Image 1: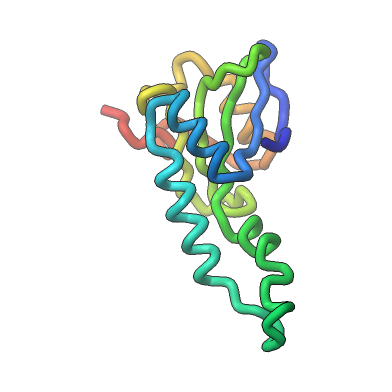
Image 2 (image 1 turned 135 degrees about the vertical axis):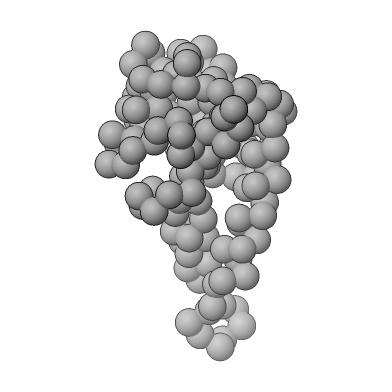
Length: 138
């Protein structure tokens, strides 16, 4: 995981960098972030075009391309490391929409963590409102 930013009440946002981290997040949070992570990583891999025809050099810059083109997968953690919410933001956190933020079991994280979600939005300079980012609202 990679540190992203602090949030109020001793919580912290981290970026999930590997499939293993996504699997752990899915298990701890009882949702399917690993499925989305795998799908988005495969899309990024399929979109990669090597800049050389020399076989041994074809994967140079592949991981950098994947990181740039994949959505950001983030986890909100408390001071003890417990997962509180999971977010998927557009690549490079561009304000183009397409964010998803959920709590454990796909529950609504906004009642408990709206201030932390606002801190994440402020960090990236985007608005992460419940109406746009929580997909299971009723």
